[in-house]
Amino acid sequence: MSSMKDLLEKMDANYPFAGEPEQIPGDQVRGTDAVKIAKRTVPYQKHPLQGKLVGAGAAEESVEHIADQLRKELEEYGAAGSGISSGSSMDRREVRQLRRDQKAQQQQAKAQKDEINKEIKGLKQQSLAVSKQPVAPPNPNDPASVAQFAAASNQKRAEKTQLALQRRSLNQAKKQIG
Image 1 (cartoon, rainbow, N blue to C red):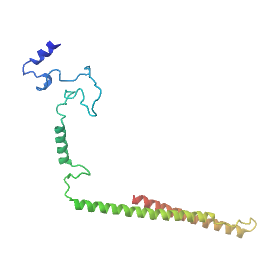
Image 2: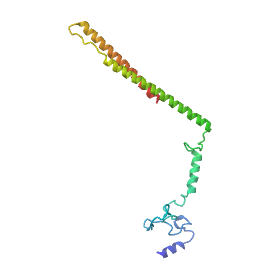
Image 3: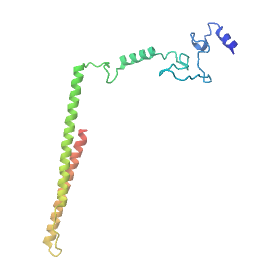
Image 4: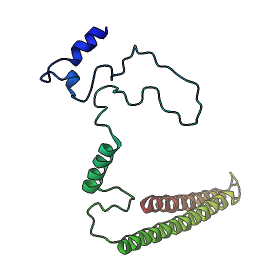
């Protein structure tokens, strides 16, 4: 095995090993390599395979390379919620004022919703009160009594329908607020 390793090391510079001139045979980690796992003596112990090449692209995944990529991305696109500008012409005072305005609008919408909920609750109570109103039972032998009962029932039904329509319109208004 060592003769094969020696042969590969002595190869001409025209044929670099694995495409990387700084890599020498034996630097790569293979799946069959035995890893000596020592008992931890310190909380952050060095990994036994640290410094060896693992897979493709391991050399370019340095911290500096990743930091450069992130800087370029943030310069180009900016980051939401960060102090890094995304090309916006607004300064901090304008952004703060915009946020204050948005918060005031949210509070106003919440107050409107609360008011609508109170009105809906009042309409429900009115509807319940209308439902509980007693209606005198009709005398089947007296046509005037039957007509009076029908008129009272129709009036009660009309009031309940009107209250239901008001509740429905308030619910729609509440949905439009958000």
